Length: 172
Image (cartoon, rainbow, N blue to C red; front, top):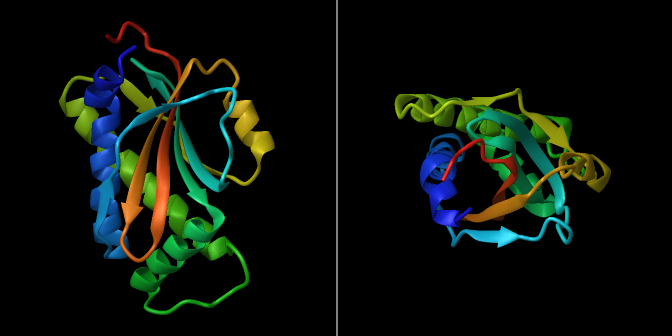
């Protein structure tokens, strides 16, 4: 399947909602880099992810994929604007993980509404955190393609939206 077809139908609304959520929730400017296709067999886990399984016209998983340092920086930023101040912990705290989960849930909720408006039959399951390559390996079973979009966030760094696609259910 061509990247542009998947991008225009499913990936673009999720990407746009992620950029909006970063501005609203973290008060950060964000922009998407060039989309590319990753190798399923060479895929590397960067340290932390929030995932939401997708079914319907596209089956697979949306992955909000972070380097550990970026997850901590974005988690702190999200918490800072939600709470005003945060408890500085060592590493990626439970509070930071919860803030990153809220960010992903916000993106998925808004993207789901946008996709339904266009008639796309796409359903998202509840998001959950992933902390190890072992769990990512389970998500990669039966994945045909991985499409990735880097999201650059001012003062935070870069994280990725990865789309693990298992099948396209007639999408072209």
